[in-house]
Length: 244
Ligand SMILES: [Zn+2]
Image: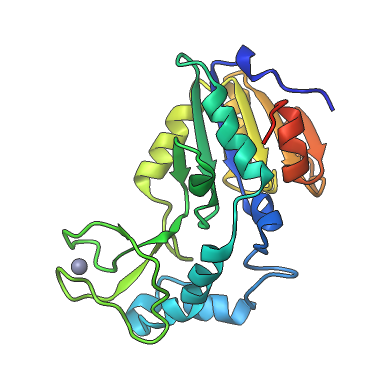
């Protein structure tokens, strides 16, 4: 495998998905070997649960929050944090993650977009409430937590099924993709959104585009110029020539 000399790029954008956290003991949420069955996800993972049965969202995600507290960043998370630290001040770096596990933050990455939010925070379920999302380690399995400002139920600060991606996260992602010259997608399928649309944007502005994933693309996406197959935690430290 040829190393990527990151010093020769100005604007680096990395997109990560569930595959990067598998070595931290976190299985994908859905699909084969996933941690939840589809019936639970449909019942409690959809935004409509907040009105129908607000404690249901904690029944699904409260246990996950406990699991995440014992999970540790792996060599792939650490390599991305080390990569960011190694850059010169005139280089830019943005890490966009679809993961809600908070492991990039704990590995030390700084400039992160949480495209789907993060389980590390809770927030009020009323969008019009003046309260802010806050760091919260409690699983709330026993009692429905309520907002200290308005009394509405609290919810995890994540994007539920049926909800839009946050405007600010999309804005920052698209802005970074406007002048990216190295785009890496890691541990995510290259063929479904957002990876598919992000890589198209990156290719359009002339970036080098690389997919790093365990499985080859089922329907190859021609916007990826390179595909590296294998475990992210083994590939990334070697790819960037970093000791982590
Ligand atoms: Zn509130």
